[in-house]
Length: 174
Ligand code: 5GP
Image 1 (cartoon, protein in one colour):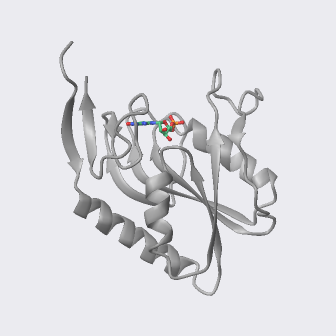
Image 2 (cartoon, protein in one colour):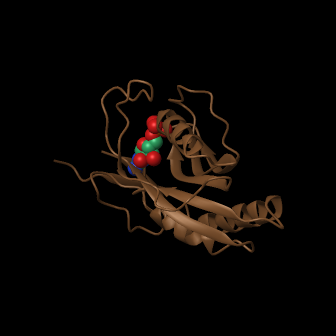
């Protein structure tokens, strides 16, 4: 078996600048207010940790974990969460924090769930917007980088639970 190849996509510095810019934009958009950031586990854990430290507004944090489900439709009731939101988000401004948006199906279900809990507003922040396989026309309010295709690992992103700890982002070629 040949070794997987890791092709650099985003350096530490590029990621740092992107996260700083996202933090500045979000802090400006919500100035005089506060937000609840909900990170989507597991992939967003590192991005979320860096992003909240770039905010100059009050922020509450929580995480959610959507467990794997059959055909990925919200309405079929097949979406279940192995970690739900603990904090009260009624009438709060919520930002869902995703590592990468691919088909968009996960996010659509998460937005529906967060709205059903009574959030005042729900916006999306994703480090990477991957467009090739998008199935749902979803608006990503705060997107770090856009890429056409590839399978990315590092900075929280895994392949079979490996590589999450890498400080840069790579394209994994098996
Ligand atoms: P979606 O519902 O948008 O298709 O799926 C999004 C989720 O799929 C992401 O949160 C992530 O967990 C996973 N995913 C999609 N593309 C990639 C990728 O290029 N690399 C990794 N490691 N995970 C991905």
